[in-house]
Length: 114
Length: 113
Image (tube, rainbow over all chains, first blue to last red; front, side):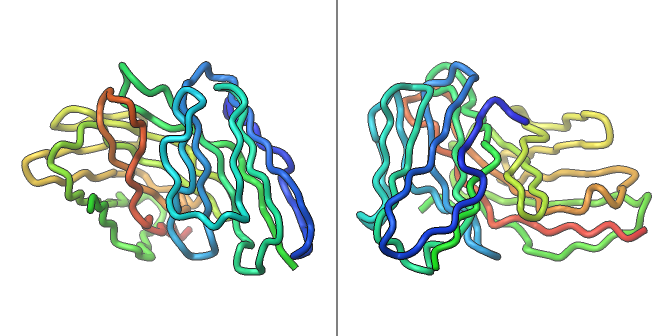
């Protein structure tokens, strides 16, 4: 286990449900990231938060809504998802600033949208 | 557009052989280079990083960096079936206000007993 935890580890939801993914990092980092990884596809960067401020949103549909209340916690709120949103959602953290920016990943949430 | 290119594989090597994984990158200003290992259904795990030209060894793993050629590689000596995984190359910068890494699509390695 790394210093980044994610809950839940598995989630099955219907297209009309609302759910949230949670990420917590215990590494003292100041940046957190959400990635999507679909089957046989590369990592897709979704959102970046540096010092709790969102600095990147890679054209992600509005049915995904991130929240970063502090530098240790990151949420991804989900609503009215589509079956093609089924994927592994990964959270990562890094120390931005005087560093080489190595990122550490959580175990991921396997999401299935029915 | 900053890009990181990797051969998707699969790369198949016999147990005990040397596996060689390669990566090229487009941004000449890149300063940090990482190799992540990802087992099927699991999250990426950082296994090696290199910042200076040359070789860096850690156990059975050796990372090699050639900034002039914009090329980074990972050698795995005495490959084991447990090394079978997808290896992701990632490239970034030092410092700044953005910690984003550019990831390659990964090379799938299969080590045959």
